[in-house]
Image: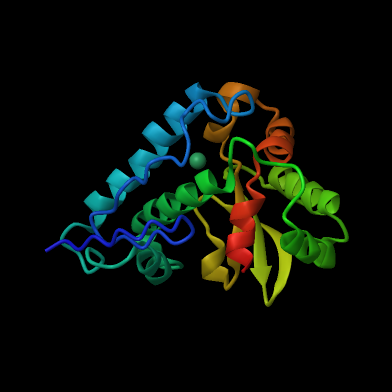
Length: 213
Ligand code: MN
């Protein structure tokens, strides 16, 4: 029997097989003009959905069929023969986390408790945003820029392709998708413009605070 745990906590999609495509936390056009409805319809409706569908196909009837998404990710990470399962599981998780890292009225000042933590780690909110943007830009090829918690300290890291901070012992706090499918329809090759616009207008500091707490 398939078990479905309807835990709707956005930072912890712990649904067992069959994995579901969580609905977006806002309308497809809600992030305009920074991210258009056209980009969202492909990114969410085709790419993210594709990862979920592929994952369900790949794990059907296997030892992974009844595991939570996070357990599938941690138990396939670093195993070359399980790359396809890892990639689709991690991308399923990463995208749900990314949608929640954005919000239509995002950007601006972080809540005080988060701001204090950011200032302790980076000196200022601007310095933190600058490092996130430069990291998003410097990721060669597809991947992700992340704000993470590492031994109680906030830091910025990048990962390639589907790689995910939880396999490195970090707690993810926020992410920016820097795969071309995330920005190419709206920004073409201008990845820095996309990253800066996301940080200024969409980044969800409230979500970050929940993940830090
Ligand atoms: Mn993506």
